[in-house]
Image (cartoon, rainbow, N blue to C red):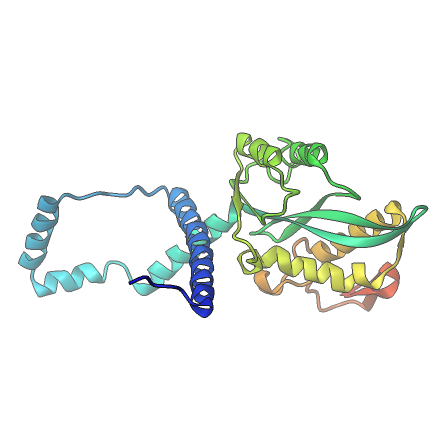
Length: 278
């Protein structure tokens, strides 16, 4: 007796297969993060034989209840929480994220789409505009990679992991060059912006506070607008991920004396209130 799949059964089989593939990609990415954390902690996996496990079980039963209680109080919950926070901070300190966004610019040829490439150091929230171009290609991406991994002022120099989506502009040659410089590229599963929330939040901020509220006539005004916003982002904008603090605070931040002044950027779109130094 032959079995024939009905259309609705075939649809559910395809749907379940797609869901399973998405889950496997997310699991692989999480495993890579766990492995990175384990390497950062300098821990090694210890494999025990069956005989060793039995010996440990017998010794554990031989210990009295009082001794076991003393052993369990060596590490308190506060200590475990402190270790967890320290290792998480060390993990994010070696991770950066990269992403593209677009903006429309008026030029002599008419309305042109510019691609903007931003790189963020996740732990410090520091953002760098790696470059902008109307048609990014492999040669341009290679030049960007050399600039990012420069041993003197490259943002990715010393960074172990770089989070990126599956945009084709992140070409294989670009990824291979970063791998050779010691930066491992972690490609995220498709349609998973929640895995790079920090740089995604920055993209929303620069769009809503700058790019979507201005009309740029040429590449030079666009560069100047981006530099102005990044200056505001680092020196004048509070960040919840940093305890509502500033990335690069100026001298005198937090003072209670002095006249309150307002600093405006981008024609008044960005405002920063501070106290004038005495």
